[in-house]
Length: 398
Ligand SMILES: *Cc1c(COP(=O)(O)O)cnc(C)c1O
Image 1 (tube, rainbow, N blue to C red):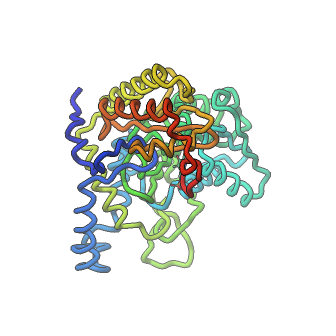
Image 2: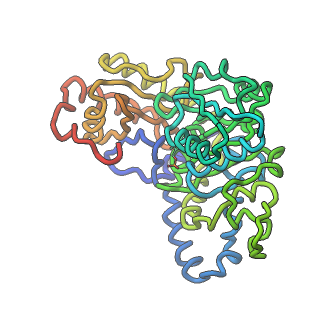
Image 3: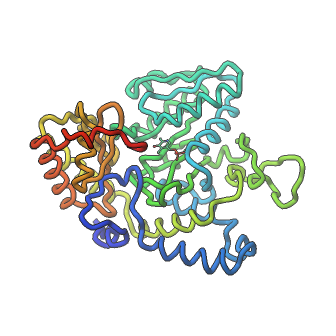
């Protein structure tokens, strides 16, 4: 192992007394982001004002940072661009992919996909109004459901609830054999597991950067388009910054070259500065090392919980090779249990109907935190500490 995770741990702010197993939902603050954003605000926005688009390189940030993310997920330079939210990027990728398959009318996905991806797909298909259907199957049935009636296979690689991991390479290969294009959502993959978009021959991919990549709440999303599709994929959200010559201010739209056409409007420069600083933490991190530690931590957690908390039922694949970097357990009072854990300083989250979910992030979480977390969970369950009225009141965000 070459990665020094004691070094990366020091790069994050972790509040005293908190055990944070929710980096799969919102990564912690990278210390470098504070200075980077402050510097950007004063030296760039403050002193350079509109000149910053050129002099501080703002206009190139979505591409430059896209390339940095590309290194973590096996994407070549010039295949990723940043902007908007993940839901928007799902729309863009699916719309472009569908247009590349004009004779087919089915989008195939699974019921482990994140609802927003499915909502976006439904909305898009309705707007297109050409008889499209969204076919949703069980995750285990996806492979068998691929056929030459399908236009696009749209999947999230790691299930947000259970952590179940799809075989991206095998499913993409099967899809291509049937003439199907693929859209992969990497929300719970980028920064969580090794990803090789090039090797898997993925057509389109999208992901967010506020989860395992620690870019901060609402950090901009990314979109990947394989080189072979870049000049044929028509951008459905044809904004001015995806135009071939935005500052020609033509009345007609001509898509820009390559991945630039997936840009839409003005990029969020302050948020990109925070994300850029967050990505520094990945310099020198070997994704194979990350995976090894992640598997060790999730395995330890499952083993210890099953030994000490028999009332929790594993809701993640037992085989480490088939799960990402998160683990969930079921409990009929899952919501209250999680509130009681949070009150004790152990942060995870709850996913309806009955799952308590924990993310394992080797950059800043190690064996000591996992063992301490198990101790708290055991205590909360054996003493039924969750059974108090204040833990049953639902908050806006769970
Ligand atoms: C987190 C997540 C989203 C969230 O989308 P936003 O537009 O960033 O709110 C979408 N899809 C998946 C698979 C996710 O895990």
